[in-house]
Length: 79
Image (tube, rainbow, N blue to C red; front, side, top):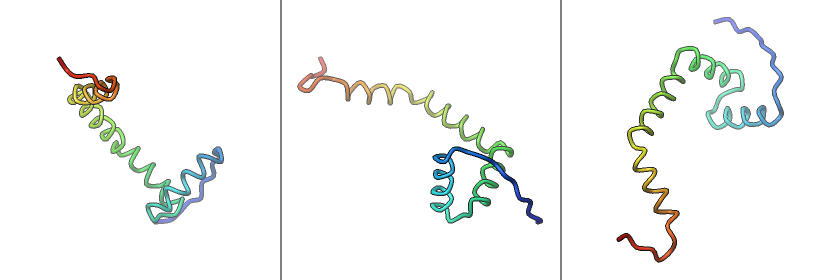
């Protein structure tokens, strides 16, 4: 497939995050950005976000219980 060069200006911190993540994945910046665009436009990202939202909704009580347990004062006991 033929390659086309794109240009974009982003904040330096965003650029650094992209560089690090691409390196973590063993990808060039171009390949990493291409993957992000493909995931976004294919609906993969939206499906993943929806799945995460459903998981959180289904298990919210578990997270609430864990958070409440962390906030209980030391030495407190359930009645």
